[in-house]
Image 1 (cartoon, rainbow, N blue to C red):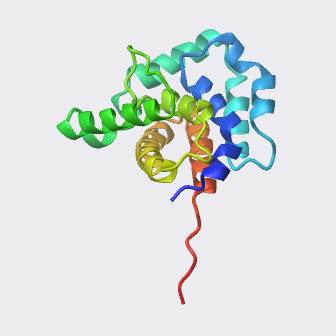
Image 2 (cartoon, rainbow, N blue to C red):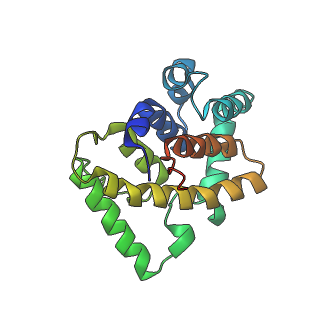
Length: 188
């Protein structure tokens, strides 16, 4: 189960993750974006700092080429979080429909050109949506976080294998989710 109050506390960082996981533009690498989204106590801070430092050694053109080579041309690095589990199976279509409905419940209008399991869109949703004090939010977010955890696990494995700087970004995202997991009370 996810602690929605903790998740809300990290909203700014989800905006940063969304920007960094979309096709790179020059303004995406302004230092103020990083400073506004992360402080040294953030659970993803160390990995995001490593990502940031690695990206600083490349030109924008090199970053764009790396992004395309990683996310557009490597099947195992797809940014579609249900793809790894379902590929093109019927179950994937059902999950996509559930995600779209979830977004609409919280006021997000889905872009026509994008699937609801696109990782930057999912991060953007976490950044933009308001879920505190919404009845049913914990149950609805359980599915969303499960899709994110499953999909980013497979993505992280592929990024690590390819020694991609994006590994650290996705590791920081996963650390953020992990910090928001409610700890079950130990039964005696």
